[in-house]
Amino acid sequence: MQRCIYCPAQFDEAPKEHVIHAFLGARWKDGRLICEACQSAFAGGIDTVLAERLQPFRLLLGIEGDHGGTGKPLKNLAVTSGETIDLGPRGEPRIVRPSVKIAEEGDRHLVQVKIGREKDLGWALNEVRKELPDAMLDPEQIKKLAVKKKERLDGEVTFDLTLGGLDFFRAVLKCCTNLFAAHNADARNAFLEPAFDPVREFVRNGTGQMGDFGRWFTSGNPLQLPRRGPAGQTIMLTTRGGLIEGVMEFFGNLPFAVRLTTAYEGPPIRCAYMVDPYREANPAEQRLTGDELAMFDHHLPVFEEQSPGNNVVVQGAWDVALNRFMTHYTERENEDKVQKATDEARSIDSRLAAMPRDQVVEMMRRKVNERFEWFEKTGDATGITVIGTKAGKGTNPS
Image (cartoon, rainbow, N blue to C red; front, side, top):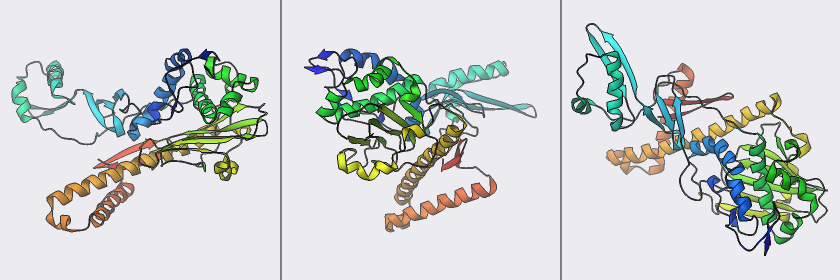
């Protein structure tokens, strides 16, 4: 018989709960933590909020969840050059609404149509007829004239990143309390003690002050935490007297300070759980406890020194963190394009095929860097995708 760490009702069995959410690439599950009723309530509430708020970051990196897939695209984003797009995995745009541009040239009209799917051609031609009702438009003939190509968009697209809020922080604390209770049986029993009643009520019902349990970091400097890969998820918790506090960091750059209790009376506890959502590290997931984490204690920020609210100082720290996230994204995308360009070049050029692959890769990297240097010098963005945040911009070849 188990006791739910949140209600805390007794139950015989329940679906296994992911310690960190499956959509973040984590696979550690435990069936002894949460009853089915609480799991259902969380899934339809705070878990959904966390997934929606983190989806833009997950989508840009192309992170696949434990159940596969990268989640829903960001839909119907307006581009300043006139297109409407869905933004898919790794920032791949797909035109979802035809873009029609009509220009006069003497006694002729030049018509440019962009569509994302062939089945949208009829829709696009109807848009043309609204401007040119007498135009003779033969869909089959137009299909023969069409050119299928993949190119960068000329305009800019903007979307909001919305982090924070009560339900978001409840979901963050749920991951952390899951880890605390899952890492060993003594901690699971301790979590049922009255010292944890406030955080339990906060996670389950949103009761209490948000700043007592989750806070914003006031510095954008990277944290010295154990990690699995450059975009990993990390939870680290430690005891400081009667306090249990720590940090949860998303995608290697987006940290939040957490505190589980101020009245802990048990033995010292240190625990951490790290996940590489790319599944490239070996192992891709790692759990650490006790003395294995002692070296990180002095790197773990003090909860009381962080901000209970989002303010100007927090915004400055987050600008730095977001810029660091975008730097990782663009560097990874650039390297992926270098590797693909290398393989393509060696497949069509026998001279390059005869060279060591690493040598060709370095040549490609040099070409990419030269193109970026030209962009920084002249502002000429031909062949370059520019991705901006409030703190700066990243570039990658299209």
